Image 1 (cartoon, rainbow, N blue to C red):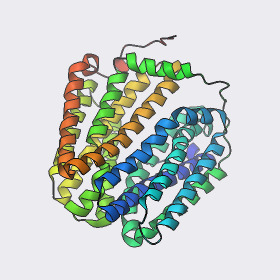
Image 2: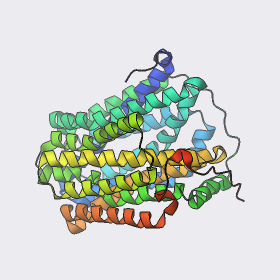
Image 3: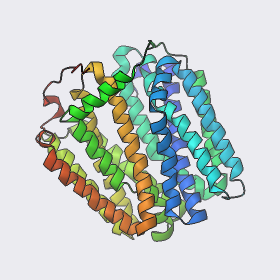
Image 4: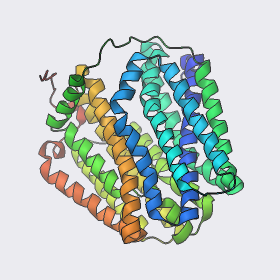
Length: 412
């Protein structure tokens, strides 16, 4: 990837990229380390499920509050406060776990506090970018930022696996060090100029929800993704597969965690180069079928290379769905409702990931890890069949660009 030279000379944008890389590396490293250590200490899939619960509760509880704060407070200040909070959490984790895992309830409490901070980080960092670059460079900046973020999310699990192997329980001190770099980066960025909202009404959020509910393209595409990931996600179970089934150790866990992101990067690059053809609706449901099959293969595999390949396909198929869904949402949504609809979409995405972790851990505790994954694959395929049958407009969609233009409904 080559960065356009005007952006390369934009000091604040380069610092913004460093900030995103540090946050991505810290998030992925924490996920790998905590999952490994909790399962190593307890051997309980249900305890892994509770990690997902600590992630989803703050997202729902703080959805409106975080948006209001980001709209009314300086965004750099919001990031400084929240990153400081996360840094303190990582330092407390490192201190608490210095002699190994003892009381996991303390770990859950710290993860919950970390998730409360992350509920503000997401909206703040996304809203900050337009104020750092000129308007005519924004599309380039978004492309570069997204690519850098995806690359960091891909490299993070590789790095975390090796750090976990080399330093084991001391890895949390290194994660805290990464967050120190993130704080330095955000502190060095100049406060971007923003137009602050003067009011925020409950009706604004309701209008976004109403639009999503009534649109024949947006609601089905969001719902398919929500239930597919919620029912089929295997990410929370990877420590069990690495330790008990594939027996590959922490380095192997890092590779398992990284494969979906690597598949996503390749699929995204190919779609950017060649497009997705003239049958977007069929491509969406085809990707869901491939996604289901990859979950089934992973669940039944006891061979490391086959499991890696299945996770690679898992990530690639999911990226096809992500790109198509995002295009549909952007092109179907009137500009006057764009922020509210994207807020609903963010909530759907976060819920699918974290509820998927919760569902996967609970199912593995009740059914066993392999039956839980196989059942998830079958349920995901069932969601695809149901959505294909119910969503005539989405099924027949040629390209998102050719959707009927939607006017601002102005519901009251």
